[in-house]
Length: 103
Image 1 (cartoon, one colour):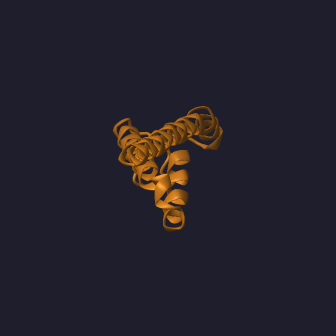
Image 2: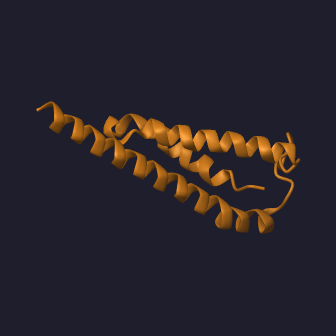
């Protein structure tokens, strides 16, 4: 129900620090992955009426929301960061290989 709040928080932070991170880390990739996942999860939760357009917005209370955030939201966000890290590493190796081949 609230698992999307964890990647949302991560996306807000990475978007805020985006200008300070060197381009070689492709933070735009991470932001796209995070915000895209947040949008998909928000739509899914809206479709299942787990989110409502009026306060308190979530149909469950903190005792139900917190465990879901810890069991689903945190691992999901960690996996997104790991995939992004692999993508950045592959891009770095690829650019190094291109530099070696052109010399």
